[in-house]
Length: 319
Length: 320
Image 1 (cartoon, rainbow over the protein chains, first blue to last red):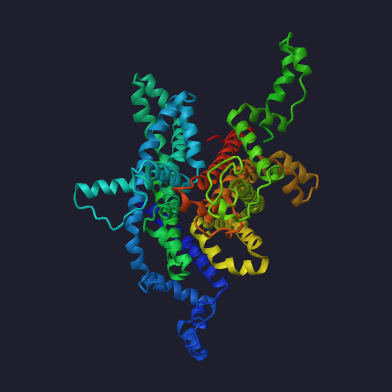
Image 2: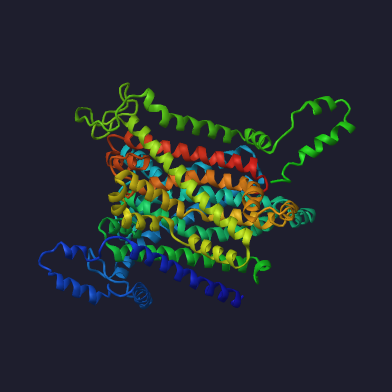
């Protein structure tokens, strides 16, 4: 087991290096001068500008700049935000908790909804319930998150005036009253993200269950005289969860991407909102850092999916 | 795909056993692969409904302006933020422009982005997958490493980054609208070819061992002809399914970019851009958001149903 995880870990390193190279190449190839703001400033003479270029290492060949950038990245030196003069990592650390909170709750909600629906759908395929669930799933992954968000705001904030449409991230949960306010402001963003995720998850649980229901071991369990409930929930369900759990791990980066839109709609000050704002402000260090974090998330959760697959299914552990 | 049609063999065996049914069986027209697929597709009711809705939408946005003479760009402050009426069936926006006309114009852009991005992704994916699967060996492993790398790239943040960096220079070279169109379509296409590449590769790997390829080799057919004339047509089923679903995904991606204000320029009202502009008027002019949003939803939903039906029809072995 240890060797398996180690091998997976080693495989992840070239991928991360590759991604960092891609991001670096995009930035290096991009038109535009990082010192453009000085160029317009008449108080900075050309010689001084050239000195700044030299001191920043902008005249070095690309591979040296890449190497420097990479080593700095490893040391945890991610540079300063152009816009707020704060270290990029501090800025991200401030924003991450809000994103994690919304994304985490949304993911939990969609898992809790999708698994029972998927099981019932698989046990009674093509029944009224299954058809409804299928329709719901298709709607879920066809409707863009920004549209659901705006429709929810329209219904619950504008028409019914029941929920706040701007997320107050300064709110600290200290007592029951603030807790209720926190829950109320999280309902809509969580619903938007969960709806999007639940659709495909339901289909996947259903497919995995359908594959296992007619399996030989399920027939054996029934022949032994076990009740259908025990067969489905103890035997079939556990085996069906193997691909589902890996899909859950692989889906985490997607839900973070979904959070970019959701945070924009509900004005949650998470990293997604920071990314958009930094793009609008041409705040390159922050944009790069967040893109890289998203890439690391993808690789990390791919790794987790691989490891989980190995842990849950001993048949595919070694090669 | 070649063995996906066993029913032809069955019908020829039928006459000897079923005396009464012989005439009907013989009179039945020969089935081809495509008519078989069409028959299976028609049985999927939601897919047919999806195809009809999608066709209507496409005709609506393409031919709509012939029937509806609203001007999507005419600003008229006296008529701003009017609710849907007979003069403006979908209302007007904050500058008094006709929402219906803007939705039609935007739909043309959104649909063409979806189609063009899908074409790029499918072509790229097919080429890479075909080369990797056909040549095998070190070429295959290098190409698959690259595919894995691309699968690990975070698509939306990277799209945002690319558009943020390259927007201005492309705008200068090709003009505001064409430049952004080329950029968005290329980038969406370049970040979404991986699924197709994997599908094509795995089909190629199994097909190149088949007898008909061996026969072609023995007849002295060139490698390229074998790849594209003999093997490729047999992989079309999964490619078509993936391409169909790709159109929907590309439409969503474009609208996300436009919604975040990083897509097309303001004078190009794609559906996502219309939502971006409309969101600030949500409380007193909801029609500005509801129509374009509903149309994106309807388009993508119908495409997803078509894709589901096509999967049943063309690729019966891989059902979700």
